[in-house]
Length: 178
Ligand SMILES: [Fe+2]
Ligand SMILES: [Fe+2]
Image (tube, protein in one colour):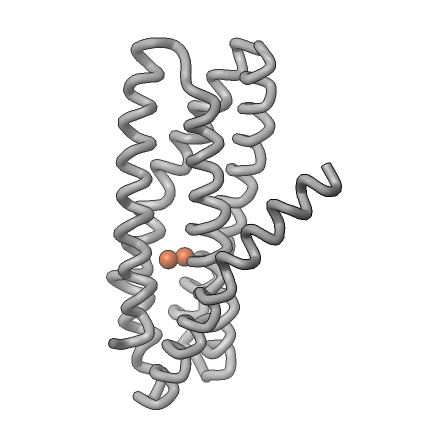
């Protein structure tokens, strides 16, 4: 498998979650309500899987190794866009969490902010993923030897191995300090 393999497989699961969120948004428009626990689950998926686990591998391993290469201006520009989009996703999620907290406490108008945040994520992720799958990953591949690509793949597996431990250490820490 090429190093981009796991990243593309992860894209398919992110698309699956986006489809679920899209369905919940349709429901929310009909009922003028949303289950705050669903929003919690969506946020957990986005923060832990899409951002920490997936964007983490992109930024901390793939982009790091690409920075050591003499990248074409166009490719450099796309990489910067991708990094900005990751940051935009984080900001959107943060605002979503704040709105969901207010909504859960009985602030009914906060529903609009919750659904707006979810809509933003639903609109943004598919485009981001397409840019990576169709344009950036094939371009990135040209900068690496087979050996370098396989070294990244090995580092990806190692990165993933740590994630579940990181997540649940944070859960216990949260309860101890919260
Ligand atoms: Fe990305
Ligand atoms: Fe990605």
